[in-house]
Amino acid sequence: MTTVVPTSEEDPVLAAVRFTADLSWADAGADVAEEQVSRLCVEAQECMIQNRWLDLASLMLTSADIIFSKASEKDLEFVYTVICNLVNKPEGLDQVHELAELISTKVTQQQIEKPALRLKIMFNLYNLLENPYSRFFVYMKALNMAVKGKVTEYVVPSFKKMDSFLREWNLGVKEHRELFLTVANILKENKSSSKDSFKFLVKYLLTFDGEDATSMSEAKEEAVLTIIEFVKAPDMFQGDLLDMPAVAQLEKDAKYAQVYQLLKIFLTQRLDAYLDFHTANSTLLMSYGLVHEDCIEKMRLMSLVDLGTNESPQIPYSLIRDTLRIEDNEVELWVVKAITAKLMDCKIDQMNQVVLVSHCIERRFGQHQWQALRTKLASWRGNIANVMSTIQANKISEDGIQAMQGLTIR
Image (tube, rainbow, N blue to C red; front, side):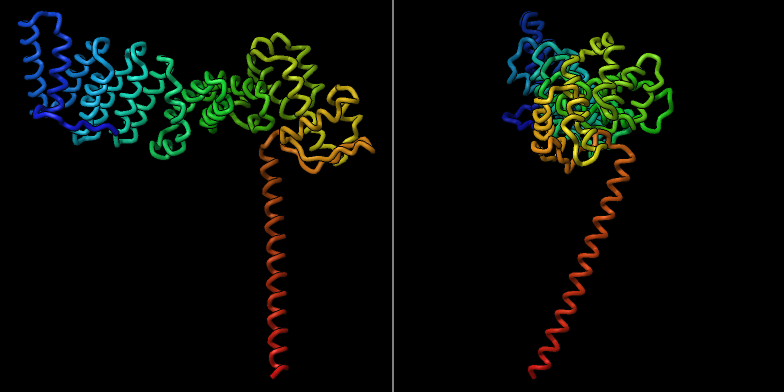
């Protein structure tokens, strides 16, 4: 948090007003400039005496905006630090929010000139605020400005604190949607953050659970984008998208039904289903930027996982070859790829030409998989309880034997 510390007898507010006035009226001639500077300083003093903080901020912001292209970044940072500190003056939260809204709106209305400095000013303002909603308002203004000013690299690190922010802000559904979608779009532009972008898209879609069809239709395009991002991602092989209402609505949608069908293939079916789909919908896939060869590679891995999940623990080489539509000498290569991607744990029995599967990931983690996990955990709990009971019984028995031995010795 930046706090103004007076270095002279003049109040920091009046010093900032005088500096901006001098600079903004410098070209008008000495007589005119002196008169206007005096007028602005008197007006600022009146605002301070009468506690008219909103009027004072408006006066200072107007002058600061005029000199933005003339002053150095150091001087601008001083001026805006003084202006931002005005949010500490009012006693009521409503007045504080009005000030925060006025300052952030004025700072972000020009995104081209010195965007990094403007972003720094916004985060200074954010840190001076205590009201959670005001903080959220300023944060969203900062995100949108970062996008328009092309300085998103300065806001991306803050996304790591998102869970903490959400606990602090206590937002409603509408605000959650706005935040998640904005963050997802920012991360999408950062190629190294595609997986994080996908996560925030999913968070956005989850806010529509329980909504009616009219409200849910708002999320159709984002649902389609989420599906495409999942299909494109070379390192995502499981998900519960099919069970999300915002995605499920696409199944019977005239425009997007085929996109939903594509997702269903990737999460529940094998390579042959994808190839049939591609034959009938190659233009659709190209329109979404999907590369056929990449889709085949991903579907081969998905199909191998499906074999490991639904076939016997011993999968013949011939079944893998036929399912993945590969040559005999490629079978082991694809098994190794699946192991490397941590999709399955298995051993290759070259002698018997089989793959011995011990574990596979679940491609689709929906209600059925949650129930299976619950059953397995209950079984483990029961086994642990039995082991503890056995240990306790043995301990009691050993204690009894030792006691008897002690009596015999006496």
